[in-house]
Length: 186
Image (cartoon, rainbow, N blue to C red; front, top):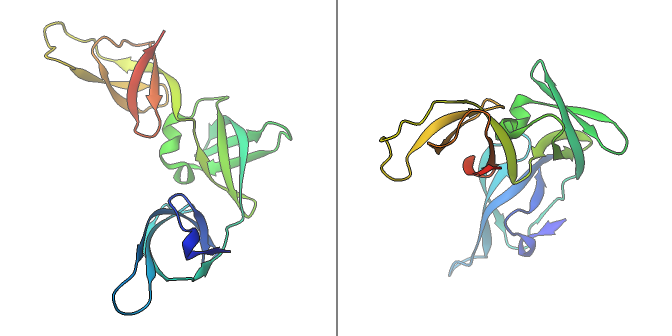
C-alpha cells in the first residue's frame, strides 16, 4: 500500500482494480480543514486521464505489475506478437494497446512489455530507434532558407519531418518520446 506522502511522478498505483500512473500531484494545505493531495492519473490499460483528490494519509493499493524484456516478432490481423527471450513464451497486444509505440516496432527489436495480473497491457520501446526511409521526395536546391524540412515516410509507415538532404534508403535515428528526427545514421 502507498500513502499520500509516497506520491511522486511516475508512481504506479491501483484504483478500482485498474493500474494507473501518476502524471502530476500537488500537496495542498488549506487554511481551514485537512490537507489533501490533488493528482492527475493516467490509466495504463485504456490511456484515459483522470483527476483524483486524496485526503492526507489516505492509502492506495500497489498494482500487480511485471515488466518483461521481450522481442517483437510480427503483426498478424491487428495483433502484435512478442516473445520472451528466456522461456520463448509468446504474448500479443492489439494495436489499441500499443498506442504510439506501434510506429517504432521493427521485427526482432527488443522491448519491455508491461503485464498486469499476468496479462500484457503495454509496451515500452527504446528511447531511440533506427528506421529506414521508405519514401522521401527529393529536396529541391534553392528551396532552402534555413532549416528547411520535408516529410519522409519510414519503414513502419510513420511520417516525420526531415532535412532536405535525407533520401530514400537512409537510416535515421528517431526519438520515440517526441517522434522527431535526430540524425542520419552512417
